[in-house]
Structures are given as C-alpha cells and as structure tokens.
Length: 164
Ligand code: S3P
Image 1 (cartoon, protein in one colour):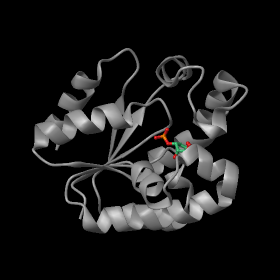
Image 2 (cartoon, protein in one colour; image 1 turned 90 degrees about the vertical axis):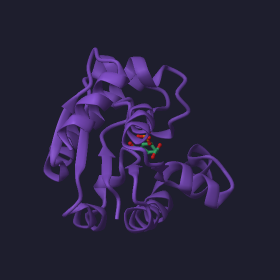
Image 3 (spheres, protein in one colour; image 1 turned 60 degrees about the horizontal axis):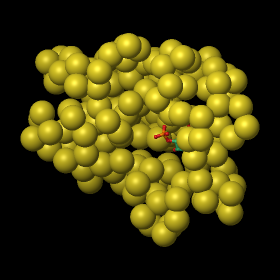
C-alpha cells in the first residue's frame, strides 16, 4: 500500500515534490501518468489526441488502483485522477497530501507551452477554471493540505516529511 499519495492540479509540483519527498523517506516515487504513458507506448498528450479524454480516464483509474496497491512508496496522481469516484473511494485510508497552488504559481510552473492537452489554447483561463472546479474535490480526499505558492519544492517536501 502506498505510503503517501500526492494529489493536486497541474503545476502544484507533484512530480518535483514527490521525487524530493521519496528521497527523504528512502522510498521510490511512482507517477501514474508515467505508468500510463509507458503502458501505451506514447505520451499522455498523444493518448488524449488519439483516443480521447474518456479513454484516458478509464485507463487512469486502473493505473491508479494498481499503483495504490502495488507501490509502497510515494505515489503521484495526475491532476484529474480524483475526478473518478472509484479513485476517491480507493484513497480512503491512505495518507493523501493535497499540494495546493494558486493560478499564478500554477501557470508559472506549467509554462505556456506545457504539452498538457487540457490547457491548449488558454493556459491561464483553463488553469483558473480547473482550480475552481477541483479544489473542493482535492480537499475532500486530503488528509493533509500543503500550500505551495511562493515556496521551493524542497521546503514543501520537508513540511510533508515532518508531518508524517
Ligand atoms: C490532467 C493532468 C495531467 C495529466 C493529464 C490530465 C488533468 O497530469 O494526467 O494531462 O486532468 O488535470 P499532471 O497533473 O501531472 O500534469
């Protein structure tokens, strides 16, 4: 069973903080987007384009379920994974850290040419809408909420490690 699960929107720093936290805890990081891309043999962006978001969400729910059971270290979930009811149910009983971020910092971290399919065309507007829509969902699954605005990833990882 996963030791810690990181949730939060694109640009929250899940991958960077996840890697630092895993090294502090002496465990490995597993990233469900990377699992999905490796299994499909193509990027998440290409899966969205070729097969569509609905297909991605189905595959994502299975990838998350497998990672939560199989991996004993830190698991980082794609920003939209918590949209699946099945995933929210599986998160119960886990230590779930919501990396909270505001629009400005998320845009800064994601960058304008982010390769994220859901942001194409209007990074700032899409991030703002996603943050508003999903914040209550992240809050509902979180056992710990950590603010990441204006903070170095190492500082965030330290706070999480100290709270475990
Ligand atoms: C998504 C976030 C992405 C990736 C996909 C969809 C989302 O992961 O799973 O592009 O719905 O927020 P990151 O949060 O790691 O960027």
